[in-house]
Image (cartoon, rainbow, N blue to C red; front, side, top):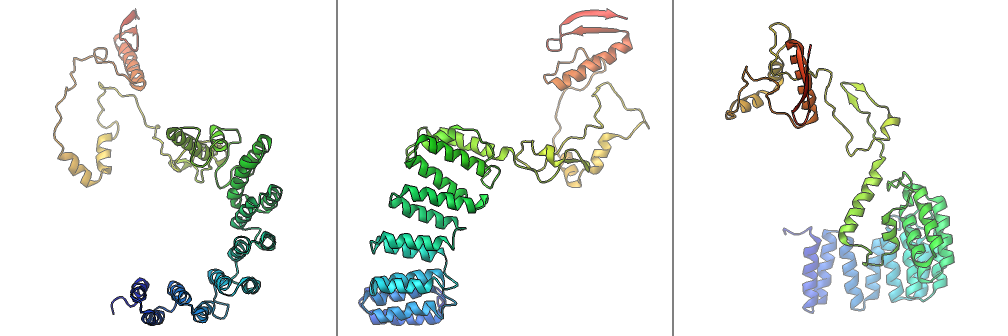
Amino acid sequence: MYMYHYPDIWYDYATWHAKGGSIDAAIKVFQRALKALPDSEMLRYAYAELEESRGAIQAAKKIYESLLGDGVSATALSHIQFMRFLRRTEGVEAARKYFLDARKSPSCTYHVYVAYAMMAFCLDKDPKMAHNVFEAGLKRFMHESVYILEYADFLTRLNDDQNIRALFERALSSLPPDESVEVWKKFTQFEQTYGDLASMLKVEQRRKEALSGGEDGTAVLESSLQDIVSRYSFMDLWPCSSNDLDHLSRQEWLAKNFNKKVEKAISLNGVTLLDKTSMASISTTTTKIVYPDTSKMVIYDPKHTPVAGSGTNAFDEILKATPPALVAFLANLPAVEGQEDDDTTTVQSQPLPRDAFRIRQYQKARASSASQTGSVSYGSAFSGDLSGSTGC
């Protein structure tokens, strides 16, 4: 009652009867299950398998035919499974005849061609028939990269290197770059296995040129150490350590993303700084860069006291723009004891900063102080030692 629409419960129930020797009870469970779930292909295949296993071929055939329906609602998978069923139960000719009818169906995809070609090759031991089927499908599915790869695997089993190269050339001449990535990869692997060094390097260079700036991000045409690893590895054997592989993978990723075009122009305060042409040469991993506003930056002077009415207090402006919750949080922070500024402390007696920006600030502050006292001291910016003095 509660699991009426769960196919796994129906399957377990029928299997329990079948294992107990009650096949008729299992068949009744499957019949009830298909009434509850009429669109479940899994249960239909399981039901047909039970009928076929006990020798009821005609009953199993009716189940497969119910999957096909009037042919309009049939799927490529139902065509393939029925074709395999006919090959098992009625022989080669029955499967071949059905394939000739199925390829005219609007639901026939390249999967049906691949399935029948491999059936003829592996089960019927007829490589010529399989080759003819692949060639017939190539006229319809030249734009399908997966079909090209399956056809190439078949020719590889035949050790037909001449036709394999011809197949790759035909496919790559018609496939767009964004759909030919896997075909180029397969072509490169083929040359690494069956070709000489010259053909191997030539195909790799052609692949880089064809996919330059494409979907896989190949933009660098120069050779890299990753190419050496690809040529001289075999199965799970690598000419380097796992750490080297990780490093090369990171380097490859950086190379692919180095020249990615940034879609949005970088703006500062609503003013565009760079156009798309100049932005293409910028290396960045983010699409938005925030720059500081340097238009109001002034040199920090600890002795400077703002004159009343001369300007707006920057700290008060910051407090006005700060959210109330953050202001309340800052007010509850504990006080930090530190050394307060002493009026008697001179600029020269303060500790020298370590960063270059503050060093320049202190140098300008010294110059300002010297202009008021009429003398200036020149010394090392890093050591603080006086190297000489000049009086005005």
